[in-house]
Image (cartoon, rainbow, N blue to C red; front, side, top):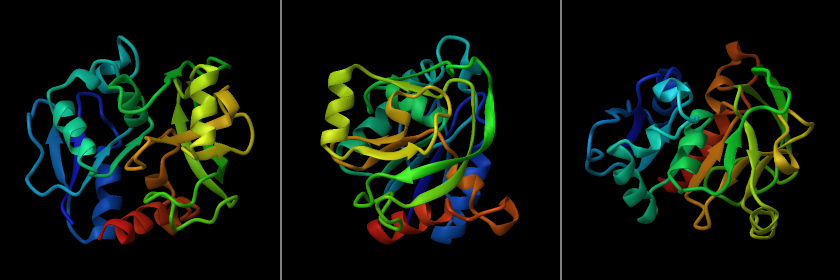
Length: 221
């Protein structure tokens, strides 16, 4: 499967994500610079990495969301291509309008960097099919603006439509209803603040994140 990892000025987890994708697919992803207007032909998976795109100088992800490559990402997502946004990638997806809500400063105004507990809320998506509903896993977070917020109507819709993919098992950053990851209505776009690529090898301390990539490959292969 052909895949692509986007690269913005300030991305710092693009290589980590690329290593995880290559380990599972057996094929190195294309590293696509933000100024490109097109994705490589036949791209079957798009990954938007964590980091501090454009230095977070405006709002986290706001400038990256307006990069030329994001038009191609939106077109691909509309055609059903899976899009995974991790940490800053989640912020980019909300700023681009591919996911609802916004990521705000953590409630405690501190950078949070540790492994957190997550509960798998939806195990039926292409991203979560390797997990069991209600299963608790541990995935690292590293963010200052991970406080997910949306209006009550949007939150109710996300809950009612089964679009909450992951939920923190305890308050991590002030996120509404402890939401850690959400899906778009079609289920082919996932934004999540925790870093599954940092729980991929035994040397990382656990491999709970590896199943996300393995399940995704099995679902779309």
